[in-house]
Length: 232
Image 1 (tube, rainbow, N blue to C red):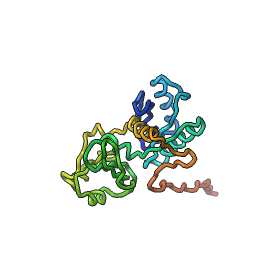
Image 2: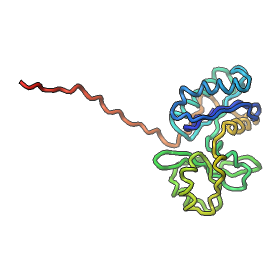
Image 3: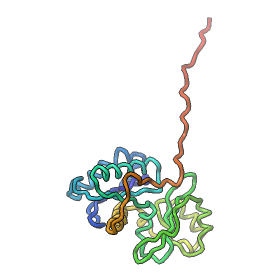
């Protein structure tokens, strides 16, 4: 399950092969929409919740509220049923369609404040190797750090593509727009690779990756009743 951003997704897979998946625009409604989506894909795959033997969840970076819903739901399901839990970077999911490209891969997600969350991967025999941990930066500073042809991808790319191309020119390799839609089936595939190696996460300690603290606006004090004077 992936609730990293406003684009949410759930998939059911068998050994990484997708049986059913759904993506939808969740906005800020992950809390009310996630479990119905889980039920929908289970029904489409012809199985019940009791048939699920592992849970794979995108752990960010992404929105604070969305990640909290997805990760807590995944942890609760895994812990209650005693099944393995695997957390996968959302940036790795964004990069995974391009894992056979012989180029550095830079997936981008929205980080707010006109900045981007950036991953840095290198493809190796169809697998992704993380070159450096994810970080938050401006598009300008990101472009200044790139010295070789680099494949740019991710949900944030369409809105910053023009600025990137203007700065990088031919160094920016831009894939087709339709390939940028994050698919939960890719998440399932990456998670299965860890499971197949006997690797999983502890539900008690797995945490979302936020990269920055949530923006919290202090509520204004409620206005008291207004007093009016009546003329004598």
